[in-house]
Length: 168
Length: 107
Image 1: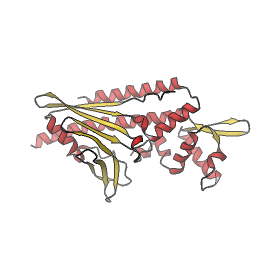
Image 2: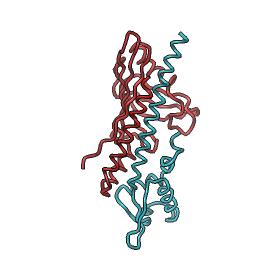
Image 3: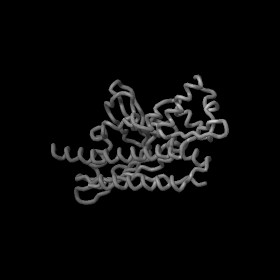
């Protein structure tokens, strides 16, 4: 049986700066805008860091100096494109295995003289470890796929909603 | 953050994650699930109960045995992951926009 598609999450935002400035703000100033509540470390996050090169890490530094990785930079194409892996599994823990990494692609597209559309796509969420275990388990038990897919449809819809909210 | 709510908090435990991984191989009785753990079967049963309460695991009688299995509703956990991630982006992108707006103002 083919692995069912798990929805790709989309989001976007329009910012009133050039593509260059938007890309720099997103990456160099990553710590300046990333919402503090989204981190995986046991202690409070002191800093969120995105290393500016292919193969670089993106990670958090805790107030006690500990570091927790989130993933790696796969594509570094300033100022238009950035792809990072999201290696935080369904248990909200870092998973070092790249085969189980989901991916986040961010594109910076000029939409006016001083306006940039930032488009974000979070894909391959089915590779995250818990997702995989559940999908496999249900397949082996011959669980009802149609109801499962219906639920995925509902999720895709709510992801679409957040897309619209973000799109301002 | 997310580790504190619902099904994901049930997963914030090594034993329970291992139990789920084992159940991914198919339904099995508690005794079989408990095999190989360095704890008593009642202790493992306690974890199974937490997993059942979180909706990740179901149990049903097969003859004299009580079988435990991953719940098709465990897909709700997946849905939760997707919902958490979309909530994260729904927070992060406006935060990015706000950051840029503030930077522009202070310039």
